Length: 610
Ligand code: ADP
Ligand code: MG
Image (cartoon, rainbow, N blue to C red; front, side, top):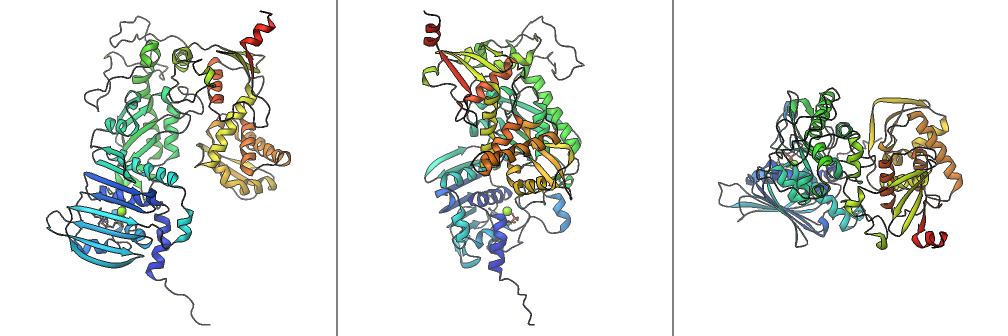
């Protein structure tokens, strides 16, 4: 038999590798922005046409490249950033694999212009499908400009796989935001189809966040600062009252690199525990600085996942840093300001990195049960009294603003709950089953179980449709024995279960290991949860003609919803009402039965024969 193994031509090998590095225009944006940062740029321009499908151009004022380097930069494994294996553990740059430019050049038409500051002329290279078509001297400003045209022109399968411009653009902005937040000391502009989307100057971090997410953010941010031998943490958390229903701005940066880490995410959300209602998500912008030799960045192609050697200690440090900040900066002003003041925007402090002034003698930490609660004798130096009424959590909950919420009722009732009235909304429970509350045009009764089912159902559907829901990682993963058909079912549904927040691995035989569960399920015993959920799912298969995802969402909602007979606190009821009315179809449970009954004023009048 003749030999059959052949080496792939470079261009094919590059195309295959490119798939890992460049999945969509946004991945190219990330790589190119990071190259500009690594080149020491202070100003970076990003120009996008048709969500990157036609053009992506990045212009920087960084160090530039020599003629030879410019040419070499497109070779696979060509990098100026590391030279030997040991340096992999001392990485201070964004890039180190030398793969991005080679990958991009394999699947697009690329034009690079680059000039070293000390040279008069720069160099221009045209390259397509890994082939250099031309290199010549050119006049160009110091730094580098790289244009990526017709991305995936030679990989139609990829090109066809791209989503709508709106979706691809959202991904690009997401990558841009991560880089721009990691580097507030760099100025950026972003243009899409000639419209300017961002024009942000180098600035302190608080200003950068405000510039990117809007002036309202200034009053929402609480500084976090903690220095230890293992890690230094700084940045901001969002005040609990601004927690969002959708996962909002949640950012970790490690040595200026954006990372995702569900374990550390848990450290933050745990610190917010009890301060925000279930299903709300706090914002955070947390910057960790660690010795590069204590992390491994080289575990994932996109470098957004890293391994820490001291993960547990870092968890504890982040948790306590966030708690301290919440204790010091947040609780007191939020519950004790006059109603009016809550809605006023605090003026931007002059020195933007400095925390709002604190009363000197105020170091009460509401989490620390050992510290005596401050007594009620006010003496307010900052315009708020320092008395802590008992049950302060409740007080806090009902004073949250309606800021990020959807309108609660139809136009007619739109003015029913003005911000101030929210604090005084009355609710009560009937027979531990129904919730009663008033609206301008009368009163409504809500079936608590069906309402909660509707909320969980829509939430689950959204998670299935998008990236997925948050998973509550278990510190002690649990092993569960199931029947073999149930095990099969879990394997079959694996991907969607993951989106719902379940992280499940096979343990061999008929056992599974549950490493994570949906955040909404955090208090439910795991074995019962899984069994109940599977039961519901099998039942749904026989019951309704619907898609797998619809069934999964129904089943999860049904196994997690609060039941009739459960006593609810006012805050819980208000939260349930708010979330119900934020649903796209608040009127009915997933099975179509009504969630709300309305009694109009007229109907009441008639009953009373008014
Ligand atoms: P990596 O960033 O992993 O080194 P890349 O393929 O992204 O790999 O880039 C290859 C090399 O090209 C870099 O190591 C760097 O020397 C050079 N380079 C890329 N982009 C720029 C830029 N904008 N300015 C200066 N040099 C650059
Ligand atoms: Mg790079």
